[in-house]
Length: 125
Image (tube, rainbow, N blue to C red; front, side, top):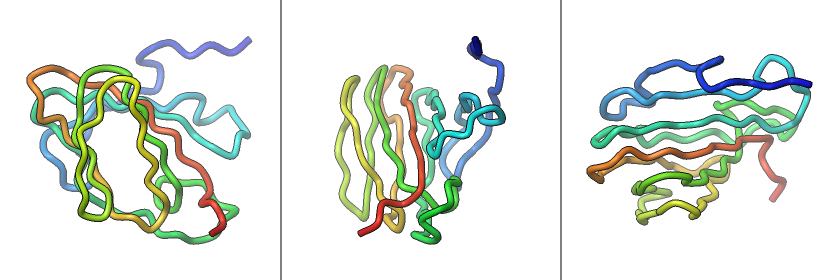
């Protein structure tokens, strides 16, 4: 049985020129052969992942640089922007950002927010 405890693969860093530093945690990054990866984002009020794009490259690759992404809000409220369109997402809401889209997330609220991010090979279109 493999169990990963909170903090086992955690780091704090700014992302893509966003405001402040995000707490990030990969799940089973080094031990799984799954085609998708899962991360936890923790955003304090006023922090953000800057807007960026993952190029739609090789459909056989799975990396943060070339991937489709699914953001699921599990705590709090965030503002997600995809290709210039912004929306408020709350706990239980999800957003899909396909490879090639410009996207980012910001916590503009007064409370912390947490998201799960699932990223994997781009979906053939």
